[in-house]
Length: 441
Ligand code: AMP
Image 1: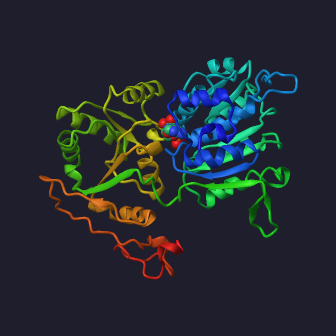
Image 2: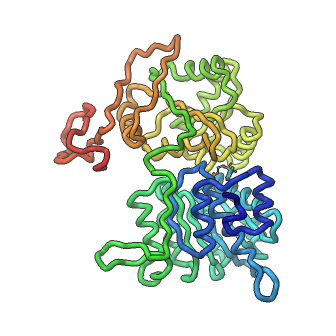
Image 3: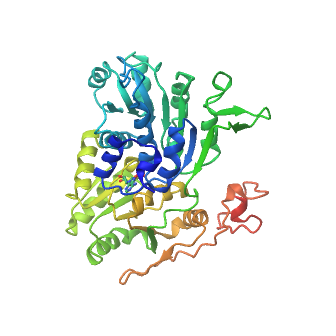
């Protein structure tokens, strides 16, 4: 199947070819025709599957449509035609860069809008109107309140990484934005994982005043999808792209940095994005690596936007080979050819693990995801492996014997708060659920 079969016109196909895409990915094959036909979409797809193009390409096609008078519609001052909401500024910048690439043979304008930078420049840029605005919720609302832009001409709303937006506590901001949008519009919601909260967010497109935009109340207190809503589920939320070679190494906390240096040098790692839990830990790890002759840098929430962008650009260009990042700072990072991610600290949530490792093995390329697991991470490991429905391969590294062994998890581990009859008074011993199976969860 080629891009031309999906209903996209020549300028878009040419731009995609310039980027070296030879055929559409699975989500693109499903989502592009659905978006073009005007459907609302709830798309579940991991990052790295070509999700951005799956909504940007048809969006460009629709916005560039020639009208009866032989002209494409031009946007009015302070107006926007398509709004893409993202959880982080990094992701906003990255999506807007994709929009620019995909629209290079079209006459459409786009802009990334996010906090932490001068508002005045952004206000000026909005004066002429923008066809496609990629924004983080907070700054968008600030500018809306200041009447720097109006929502009355929005034709399409895209919520990207909806699960992350919820994780990051944006639900109130998103609700405020949705309430102010025109009722007649197309809604696309993408999320790497689909849980109750994401469904509820999709439901928030409805409500009495908004019935007809994709969701309706079925009268039973539950919502159900309208017929015109396409539920696209490309990869099950519980699994991760099979182009990723995942393995873990059990390690004592105090030997983690030595182990990392050892692997970088001995296994001749060309590149690694290293996730760490705490920001002060990030700076410390960089200096530990540097003491061993390995040049690294870090990004975390306390660094200025300019510094984060500079560091990220150096990493993307290959000038910087090892980047240490806290989970929040790394959200939205897309480096096309990233070969390796390292969980220096194991994340608490399985979703976070899936997101992180999704930074590698993108669009069919091979990637490697390595996790350092200390004994204290055992419960998190159980939760992650239960979610993946498989045990992650373990490697032992010569010269790094562990003092505190990490047991092998049992896949139907049930966290304490989810156990039947839990009274809150259990001791802390790891529990292996006997009553519930993975399928029950
Ligand atoms: P995304 O899931 O949107 O973050 O995309 C992941 C990566 O895949 C990006 O670097 C895209 O440039 C790339 N990509 C998207 N679609 C295709 C395609 N059809 N063929 C090859 N690469 C693609």
